[in-house]
Length: 441
Image 1 (cartoon, rainbow, N blue to C red):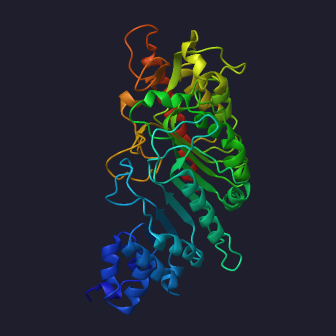
Image 2: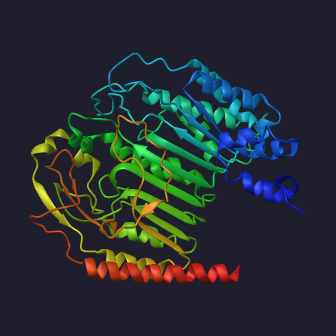
């Protein structure tokens, strides 16, 4: 007896549908009633609300359908306008239809993950010593209001979205909402999140990008990151991605935050330069299973304004005051190398089963003429030249103070062989742990 597709078990048909792109799934819906039901479930698992009239109409129609809205598991909200030059000071007419449609997200009762994408072009308000070179169409208030509107929709007690566990924000501007009541609405949403991915950007300054280092918001945001963004999820979070469009960790300072149940940590453009950075990572040793370092070098030396803070980090007070532009330059060095860090990871993270280091496919620039892909994280190219990198900081350079290649004094560390040997030992250890886990299961 010949076997036809119709005669296959339902489980096989469902498995087949998981491999089909949405256009094919929509076609499969037109075949038989059984396949229509199966394909519908997968075709509408992910939906998008874009700043486009047709996309808005589709989003609203799906949310109004008793059948289709129950299929939705993931929603992408993208505020960026196609074919609009964000740097040209043009009139910005954001479609009201998008704002009217946004509350319909509350009807996706089985929603489990959310991706919010802002424009990658932003500017700061001229207050608190901040300076702006151009007014971005998506102002700070626009972004704050969008977060607040989203939280209000998802926190509506009449339409509970109880399954939402993952939130990703692409192009989150490094400013926190000064309106406490508006900010608290979004933070209340975060309290039940288990997966949080943030891609942080700062204001766009094409004319003088080296001046960004003097922007107060750069320091304020990372100083507030633990209390505002991380504390609300400290007990529930299992996965955290923190990416920024320029190097961070040393200047501006971020010395870490501890979580009760964190299993996955991904960092982008993070600089390891202090004992606090290693201690933060090792402090996660009781729970951490996966660690991804995406363009995360060790800062081995710096020429910067002094004095440094008592904790060994550059301070906001020194780095943001104009009078320090003529201050004395001090040389700072850090003697720890990747062999030290990697050995510490191997010995101090006993549950680590995945370690990845290299260069991922995510946007690093503050502005691009092409529409950027939302960052995903965890996809890291591990070619040899991208492993165990070191970086140098020089406050007097432009357009960036950060150098991955350097010929003069102080020279780049000459320890490639010992670093890569330590990396091999770490990979060998985590691979063995992963194998043991698979055998146990």
